[in-house]
Image 1 (cartoon, rainbow, N blue to C red):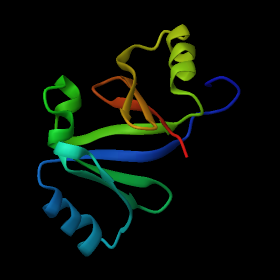
Image 2 (tube, helix red, strand yellow):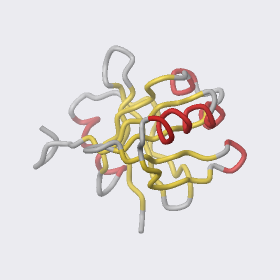
Image 3 (cartoon, helix red, strand yellow):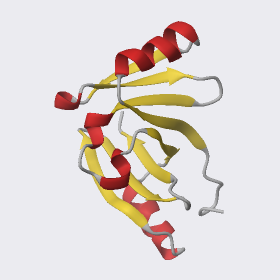
Length: 130
């Protein structure tokens, strides 16, 4: 148990090689609704989709280019929304959890951190202001 509450998964992210092909599959063929198109600058855009009880995020491979295991196409991470990424990171480190990427501001107002979920699974702490 994390702190006083159980951490809940709110999003599953996939890194995809072809965003148009992925959008065709998940939106046009499987019927998921686009909740948001997030501009990633030179890396393109990420799509947040309504997948029922959880959101699905599609991320272009260019967004994690050169970042080791974070750059591998496929299931990228399970995301936990938290109130404070840095505080949560410290608390989880105190429990012996190893971090892959320390807290950072990915985009203005978007704080992230990645930690090891065992067996090659990436887990993410996520906080967006506003």
